[in-house]
Image 1 (cartoon, protein in one colour):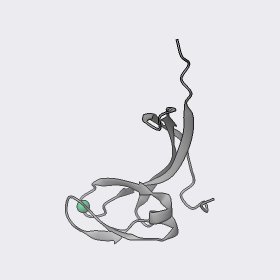
Image 2 (image 1 turned 120 degrees about the vertical axis):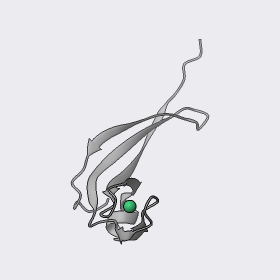
Image 3 (image 1 turned 180 degrees about the horizontal axis):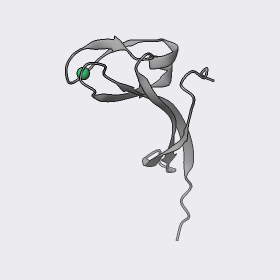
Image 4 (image 1 turned 90 degrees about the vertical axis):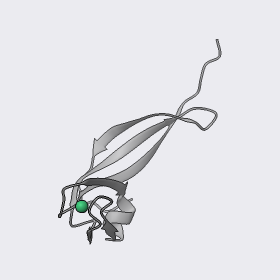
Length: 86
Ligand SMILES: [Zn+2]
């Protein structure tokens, strides 16, 4: 049986909560926190600041197989919301 080679890669993401309807969104931390971007809620269309409404920030770990196909994703660790991006 051939042994499969898996590689890991990571993405820093933030969880934001719409201040109007409470709907949750997830987007890249560099977009929400570093750029302090405004985003629009997909449910109620309210525009709000992503950084001010961040409720969590995590490092996602993706497992990719040797053909470049994503096999798995998990929460590797929770990060401080105010920490600078690397
Ligand atoms: Zn909303």
